[in-house]
Image (cartoon, rainbow, N blue to C red; front, side, top):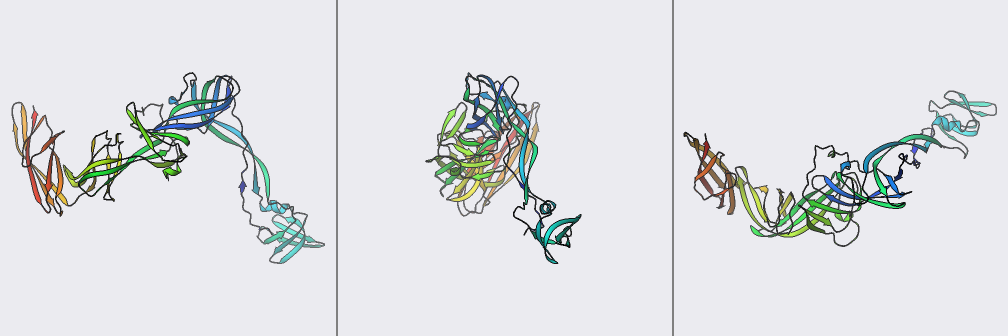
Length: 482
């Protein structure tokens, strides 16, 4: 029995392919490309090494057509990796091709019934079951003829429940449809030295690929000690090419790209969907997944030991290295606001730390995050990662005198800083304050010895006992010449 309710469904079949037209006077060949190596910068750009392969009919100049190639590739940066085989021209192409396709679709009710006109069928409705020859009576009405009896049955009024027919009855039919399809990609003009299958290595700058460094820092419960630091890299392939078994390098440093130049399109259209993937799912091969590092010019470059596979829109997190780190914890207040928890770490990894987010774990407990600037080898960094409300600092400033002389004006300031602790421990606090600015600034006195830092800044390092109330007073003068 076949229901009178018909659902239309399209069944796609394989499309016929049409070759691109040959350029006048040149052999034009469809080529495949593979990304061999990608050097990723942290600013969304990547130096990409690729290889084009094509089967050429003859020697001489040829056009290599690579479909679906990265739309975010920067045309002005295409260059051949072979000195004797330059890329003479690179351009994007967009062409339309005619496609003839065959599809299957479900027939409508009229077409289904039309197959059974003049044939013996059985029809069931609310009046019962009628057998005989199916006939058209008028628009929207059918009849069953059985000898001299004619039973008229409406079908537009949904009175037909079902009908039986013979085995040759079909619910689908095949039709041919002509459409057009757009083909786009990159066209490279090269010189072939020999006919047959050849490879042409080349490189280009691609936008949309980036890596973001971050650090997990584990501290013990002591105020001073040795901890561990894990350097991580989140790599995102938001460019226009697939990385399949591709060698990956990460650069600590960002070369300048002339954003105002038309040679670079720094706002490419790409899939921004981020699919987090474990690093173990993103590499081929077996064994340890390690990065090696070395200085290349003014940059430091990490190279992953195994190739990676990241499709467009995918991201993965990799551990770059881990190292011991010496640290000292303290509390810091700067000019205004809250007292913050801070830690000073020393880079003893033998390689630079790229700027990124540092996540602090104190005694195994997550304690906070801090923005970490670039840290060179053997350099120190101060990370402020959480508020410490147990110590409150209030600053007051009074201008005491202002005198004008024939060549200058001198203004004296009297500053008080009050410290109140509700902690039940003695804490080390670093107070930092900035004096005013002028042609000359001179510290006159301080109730607690202060260290003078750059930019007219002062720092006091004091131990704050439990439940203490302390104060610091200092005076300075600002001189402005007439």
